Length: 122
Image (tube, rainbow, N blue to C red; front, side, top):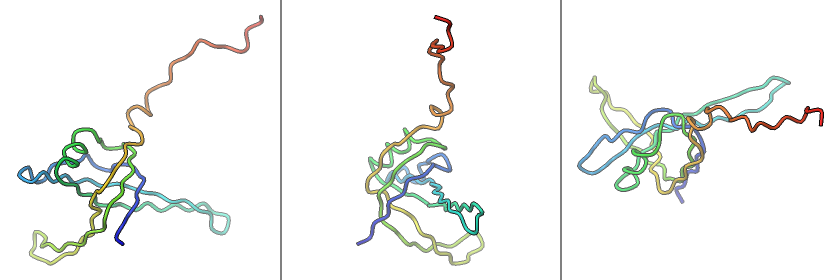
């Protein structure tokens, strides 16, 4: 079985890299926190995400940098040559399913005052 589950924040604006076959790529950051010897520790991992077809179109249209997203996908290994002709390896998460969790822009909007004040004298 080849399955990855990722819950994290979009690190770069999703972009269509191949319009002829509709391939969308972006990155997602996941973080974990723990305490070691009384000190708080944190590690952030970056995941390269790739999607195809209709899924790519939807992700490109509705997902923005900073949004929180849940992705179910498959690990894909690929080889490529960099600008200097050196062979490189990369690991991508190929999207099988996803859910929008929250938009960073909505999370940063100030909350409206309801007008309720529990310190009124009556």
